[in-house]
Amino acid sequence: MTKTRKTPADLRSANWLAGESMRAFSHRGRLRQLGFSPDDFDGRPVIGILNTWSDLNTCHGHFPERVQQIKRGVYQAGGFPVEMPAITLGEIMMKPTTMLYRNLLAMEAEELIRSYPVDGAVLMGGCDKTTPSLIMGATSAGLPAIYLPAGPMLRGFWNGETLGSGTDHWKYYAEYRAGNIESGVVDEVLAGASRSAGTCMTMGTAATMMSLAETLGMTLPGASSIPAADSNHGVMAAATGRRIVEMVWEDLVPADILTQAAFDNAITVDMAIGGSTNAIIHLVAMAGRAGVDVPLSRFDEISRRTPWLANTRPSGAYLMEDFYYAGGLRALMRQLDDLLDGSAPTVAGTPIGESWTDAVLHNDDVIRTRDNPLGPDGGTVVLTGSLAPDGAVIKQTAADPSLLRHTGPAVVFADRADLDARIDDPDLDVTADSVLVLQNAGPVGAPGMPEWGQLPIPKKLLEAGVRDMVRISDARMSGTSYGTCVLHVAPEAHVGGPLALVQDGDMVTLDVAERKLDLEVDAAELEARRSAWAPRKQIPERGYVSMYAAHVTQANRGCDFDFLHAGAPIPEPEIF
Ligand code: FES
Image 1 (cartoon, rainbow, N blue to C red):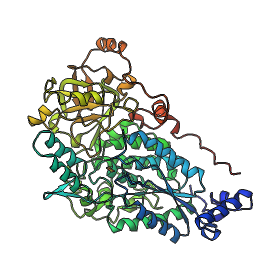
Image 2: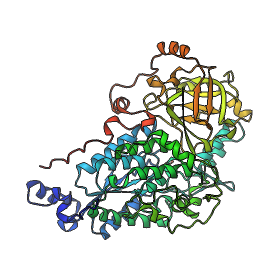
Image 3: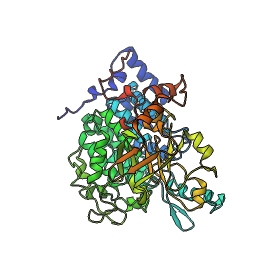
């Protein structure tokens, strides 16, 4: 549907700033406190820049400079930029998990945009949950919005070796626990892996979600792959500022962009990049805000037809800086053009297919060609079975291939505290064939579904040289992690899913090729266990956590709040 181009009189902000009501006089007058007169904003789109900067978000350190570059672009295009700080979700420092607060930032973004005189929004995120949060909130707000990804940090170095954030931390920490290196080496590795502002530079959750935001059409072409410290990132920030002003005049809103085709494109790219398992939860939640149905089965359908092409850690060898030099996301999408819908619209005002027509592949080891993929199908696989009736996921590309079909006896940990207390106990009855099971780490039970799903290998097995085992939980796993980790088991243990009924010694079967996860216990025995079962943990009755636990959906539905899914529009605020 062709939309009528807006005029200054149509601007939403005119309801606050134009006319001769008492409030309009007041709004214009009080802006003088900030040094603005009507010359600054009369007839100009007001662009809210949602900035998730904080001294405690280690990945957004360059945002103060980027805000100025966005503002420059907005001014150049005839808009009036206003910076609007929003709660940041710094993956490293925020506890118990940023996932607990993804929906809070989404709510804040939606209400910030709705409650202020904003005509369009620039969304500044990057660190893991900030990307889905901001896009979810802006989608619900329904005004023109464009996303500026923070970009990955520079690749790490230590002792002549390139280092990937998260991935190499886990690797060296395992060697430390095995007694092979000193603690000082771990410190040096972490220092070498933290070289600049920007997100983790492996294909973790941040790089995955930034790539998917571009694939969905919510960024300018090429935006997601530029390293944070590269001067081209600042250039992209200014271009983003210019573009949002034009989007306001065009009335180009997220609902125009986030279509079924856009989500299918995003799932396809997710599979080809060996993306983070977290992307599944976030894409389902983002689709829910846009009124698009994305069942878990869609991921599996697309996974089966999509080759794995991005040779990036934790699944592959390279880092995001290499991915950028190899041609970035546009070059990868070009490899997939027969699997993608090139007609899907983008914030640029052009179809997504135009973004890759002139993309050049500079290194076909980093971004593989279709005739030389790293694997024939996608990175992430959806499992179902008697242990996960509503689904579970595994990143098969980050697992030991010999464990992708495995049956073994369960060693069960009732929660994270139990895991920490017993995992290194020399008397723990565990072998390399055991299946480690963690209960009560899901959306409600933890709460917040923390990234505890890469259960540590028991120390005595580490010392014996074991580096991977089958691990199963209702938790998530960092996108930078690796291992044969079955995650997002739904329903979770806390709400009485079969995971809650697993006991030590039960045989568990994982069969990735068959997409199966089964608990080999007969139904009568499970029924007896169920009648004796009760939730392990009391959820607090006050505060944000109580609201979270009451309304968060299970992993297969995206862990959004049930009252935030797409529905009837919320009225504009009354202005008196
Ligand atoms: Fe921010 Fe990894 S900690 S992206």
